[in-house]
View 1 (cartoon, rainbow, N blue to C red):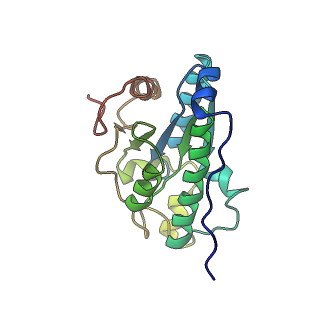
View 2: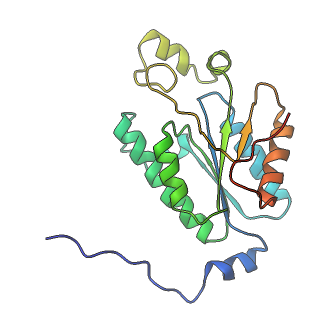
Length: 204
């Protein structure tokens, strides 16, 4: 017997009410890219900048989420898909709460990022490709993960023996090997304030 469909309960307090109280719109900023691309660095810098402007924010980072909500997941393709599905649902709740949620995940598969986008109303989801060449990411290697992957002790590592699928139409592309953190954060803040079309990339 199939389960009855689950419906979201109606509540007297709406997203618009929460956004009026917070003084700004809820949005999801989804940072995707290789390990070592600079996602966490940019996420932290962006949150500090927005917090300084009096905006309510929350940061969802891959390492933190895997210590709690997703601690039961590994790194197989199926587990990576489920990891992103859960995070997207959490991000959606934050946006409904009127919060700017910053998601910093490798999120290697295009289909899963597109499925995450589909949970949001138009304009609520900002996909940001933190774009660096693999060689640069390997050179940075802050956790020694690429070295382990090359040595064969860390299987299914994105960019080495598991694919990364770059976005085809990200709202923003940030080449962190050429731009400073300050430049990237400025572009992010400007894009958040803009109501432009989906396919916008930062210009050199």
